[in-house]
Image (cartoon, rainbow, N blue to C red):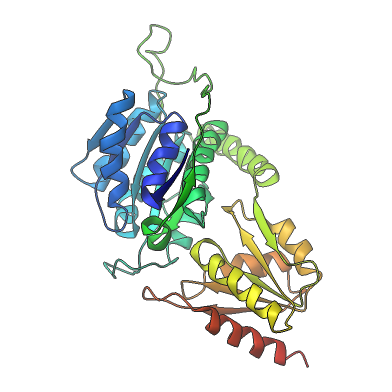
Length: 350
């Protein structure tokens, strides 16, 4: 069914289509509509919505529901995600599948409610304590807000791991056409979960291992699944990159500006292309290295002081110059800004 929909609302509709029946959260701008519409829609499909007293309470409720085998999610923004980090570490350590949506706002601290991408380090590099990864998806449209949320639930169950959907206040708040279709959901069996039957009542899902050898064995299992994810799950989009001299790299809302910049640059005779990571963990390292082998320079554009740029530099391993342009404070670069930066970088090649 085709409809006009806000990005935050699309998250909820995608989650319900994916079989999510439990949401625990606390409202925060610019993510509040996710909780609002979860409260509206989940009871209509027999699900549970509960507004927790805090983000800390919410993430621990997610832990409990995930331990019982439910498809469960929460959503917040940077200040709320900061409070959830200990619980996210517990979820990862206990290998509990869940989906967490971060609609990023400008920081640090309270900052403001305008868009940034400054949660990249916190979300992609772990955030909480211990050796773990979040799988992180980065939507760039309302359609992807729904589709990547649906994918997130499948990946969470596949890898028994928290999966983050990292958007921003632009993608969360903007309205676009959304196409949704009903799909048959068959969540996998979860024999490890505590589900109230005599066979599962003895199950205890925990992240504590008092013996060093036991914890090391658990972490080796986690390492193995992260290696599988790195091999199987990287996703990206290439646009006009086959003959590009300069490759623009960006994700989320920034990538939409870059796509328009590529189109305008082509009209002006500049050979530009776009590489958009869709998963920022696992980062599409091999695909970027292959695309970069054909270009003379890379320009990374982020709504931050430069965070993903580190992963881009690691991917190309010094074989191509990587430069950075960023806006912060809730500012989003205009196409003209990107074109000016691109022209300046190309001029240094002459």
